[in-house]
Length: 77
Image 1: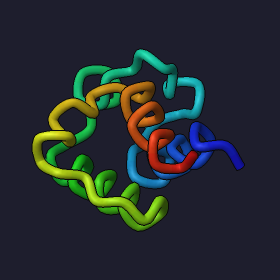
Image 2: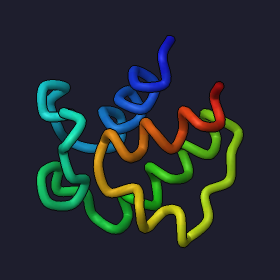
Image 3: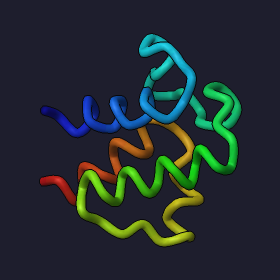
């Protein structure tokens, strides 16, 4: 399973969105209406799924679906 598919699966589990809404440029807050609690859950799920730690500074840059995929892909390689 690709990193992109895994990331999208996590987002679909946490956010109340359709898969078609998970475009690379979709912004978590503006387009996907993620709450602060959603964002914390997403980060925790990413850390668990990929066995990584995401710092607060790095988390601030993970604003779009593509940004998350690109970030996680660095560790999944």
